[in-house]
Length: 326
Image (cartoon, rainbow, N blue to C red; front, side, top):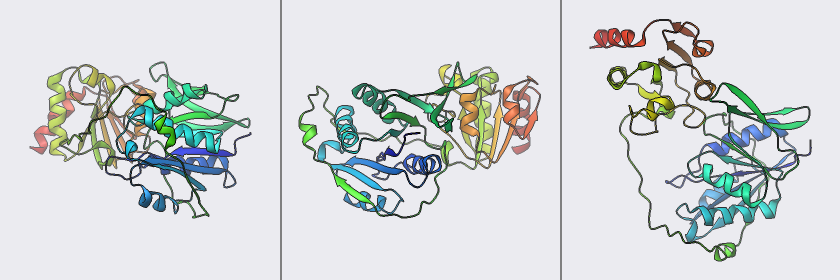
């Protein structure tokens, strides 16, 4: 296997902190390619000197950074130009990108620029027969497909935050490379970013919740969904859902969706109602402490990933739990 240089895009959140997926990908890269691999972060933004200093203690080998006012707010073309500059400087064999809202746009943009393949929303990364393989759900999550990009460089891989665990890496000598922002002058764009607005949501975020009550399409209708939200409130739990729940309009926002294209969670307790168990969703709950599933179908795939299974109409269980808790 000829992979010795790995670059990870360390995306900044709106609060100017590094998204946790960068550290998760660093840990995964070390476990896959060994301590001898040369791994670098690329971090871009405005006024990022303090962030770069913090990253030098993360166990990374090198940091490529670009500091410019045009990089303060996400702009696809400026960000793609900045990351492309780092890729050309470092020449990585693999480029890891967090599959965040911005990362999902940046990854294919860079794939087009470098005429290379992009494996999106990976749920696992492996070495098979000395070849780097990306594992991606396919056919509605019914199977896990193996993606190979052996003859192109860099291989671009996107992974949702929370899929892997970040572990403390041993500090090592870190090289910092300041990239000239002159490449941004060459960007000919018709898009002007005038500002950014951060939405504030009520309730407990699923990604930080200790208890999650999750519902799927098997709940049947909006009335039953409202009951599930009531149960979650009584349990002081976060409310999670599968994509069909959002597609049918029972919830108005995607922030509670759990799965490879949404959120990966690690609650102490996960209780699912009316969930079939597609791989897309199961991959998002694989690190839950205790999984309890309620489904009227005794052969539901979700039961194979559950610690306890209840074969019964989920709405009846919800009604009884609400009665007891009230």
